Image (cartoon, rainbow, N blue to C red; front, side, top):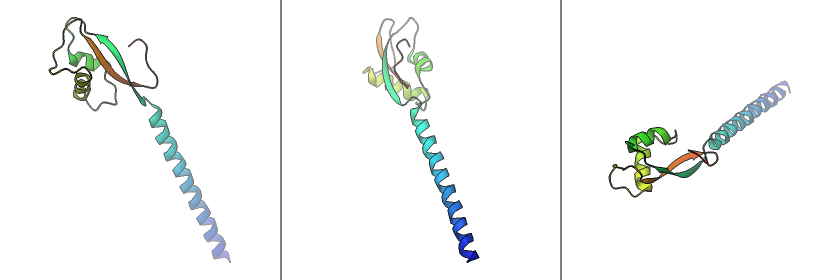
Length: 104
């Protein structure tokens, strides 16, 4: 009888540990999804001496694995065949945020 009682206690403790671990993992996953979960776009007028590299350094967020990936997306979004841009040119820039930012 004592062995059955001890086994029941151990199984109960193991169950509690598994439930706690499952809940912690679920909370961490949900929290990570809430940070910058949406992609938005904003317009940007190219200023004198701007390069795509300069713009990428200012506007790229951590969701992009590199500056090159961000530049590639900017080029695709703006149908650019080469990375050269000119003063006064209007670009569409992507960014990730929880909500749209009115003045980037």
